Length: 84
Image 1 (cartoon, rainbow, N blue to C red):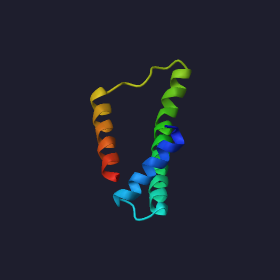
Image 2 (image 1 turned 30 degrees about the vertical axis):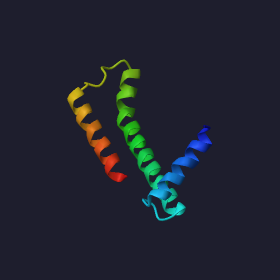
Image 3 (image 1 turned 180 degrees about the vertical axis):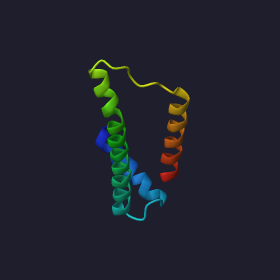
Image 4 (image 1 turned 45 degrees about the horizontal axis):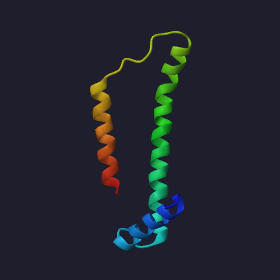
């Protein structure tokens, strides 16, 4: 199955499920999710800008808090699953 066929099948299944009342509603939702993802990526890039510049100047890097990273990741996963 090609990527195009796979996408078409996914769209068809979403519409058949009744989750979206129309093709337009599905597209609107997909665009909103895409915009949210882009905003999140922009925020992450902004947060990383100063530390990356510091590393390029030879200054110490970020301190990694693995537990915070895991918590944040779990929150993002929960938020993403609640959007659907």
